[in-house]
Image 1: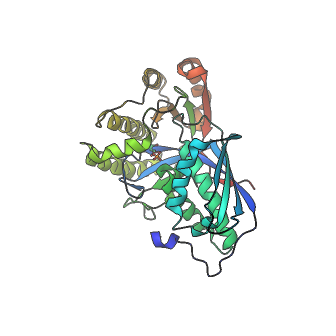
Image 2: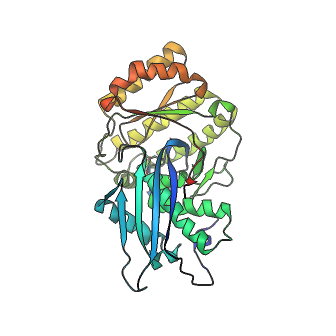
Image 3: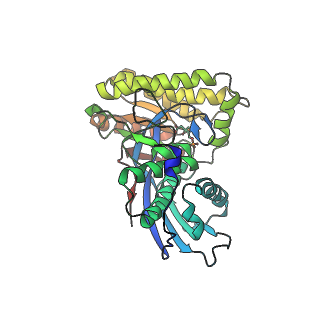
Length: 362
Ligand code: PMV
């Protein structure tokens, strides 16, 4: 689908009665990372992610028709029960960006009530689940205005709108494996929205586990917006984009054949490449913490000792995502609780696994 296919146009100018809609949308963890973009949120390389199951945002979008259409729109944001003025600029900017595709939103005032199942700005992609939950709410309004909308269009446009809020949010609508960004061997892939990985995956990846070790739950020192921008003048940028494309090609094979050792190599290399880009940009920065490295070394040691198929990946933060096949859960859970939890802030971690994507609540 092309960009112009996502512009809302309805012959009648209907206004909905006041109401609300609630969506639950998951976070995702990239296996091949997106880092670097051009306007408007077009990725410099394709990426692929596991959709998570337990880490999610629940967002209720309350809409009420504006008293006069010429009146300035009011958007209120309530996060975990409290008014959050500091979230408003990002959401207002998002509404501005998507207005051309969903012009009907200009007719309403909104109250956005949102809550996460995980700590905000902890390196777990709260922007991915948050923006996708909001985009889905807006798509529910479009569906009320145009009940003949088809499911595929609904999902693609929800991902398209999510992308304009936060790139990685484009991969949070569906699951369990989502590709975003054009790649020649993935026929239906697009830079504009995420699509489900189109090939049959090996059973070893069924119900794959992701235990997220919360090494540092503070706010990130460098936002991903700044990080993406630094890729414009990065000396290794072009090679990095080529590496990611190549890794996505290799991973596409591996996901089908179940070559888990190769899976581990690609996934860990991608995590380290992402952080290497941060460490070699101008200005440089480091998001890992000493305990991030201690955990990585422990994982390598355990893998060598036991021939386990455990591996790690990292997001733009210090937390470590420990990935492993469901059939190894017993041994790995024991290893995590005996040897890794002491490296987490306040011993906190989240057990997650692959999920199927967003769900409407009401
Ligand atoms: O969606 P953004 O703009 O916050 O970028 C996030 C990028 C990474 O999480 C670091 C990698 C990825 O592909 O999710």
